[in-house]
Length: 95
Image (cartoon, rainbow, N blue to C red; front, side):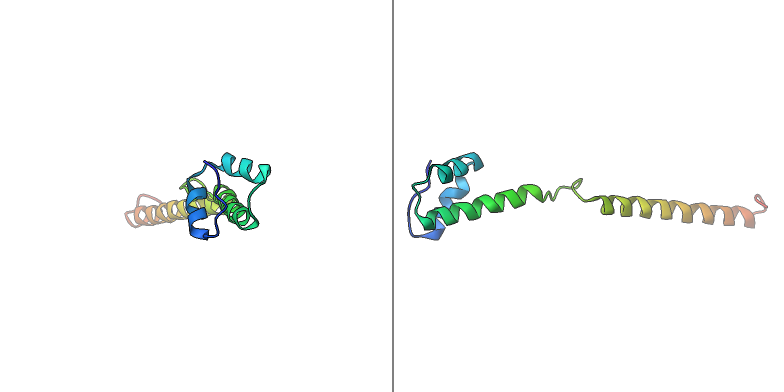
């Protein structure tokens, strides 16, 4: 599949969206595209690169989010421990 030299952005976007990233790169490197078609292909390529770098999966968050998750769990655990000591203290089991 090759990128057509059309003047309809949506038609080119539909064709480019179906192409593999390597094929888009090959088409751009080989040249022969109109400036308009090359611009649309470069936009799609840039979109894919950015989308690949930004991973929205559940394990894809940064270190800060990982630390906040752990800190929240530690805080809840600590609060439970304090509550447990308080309850056992009321029962006279802990002095």
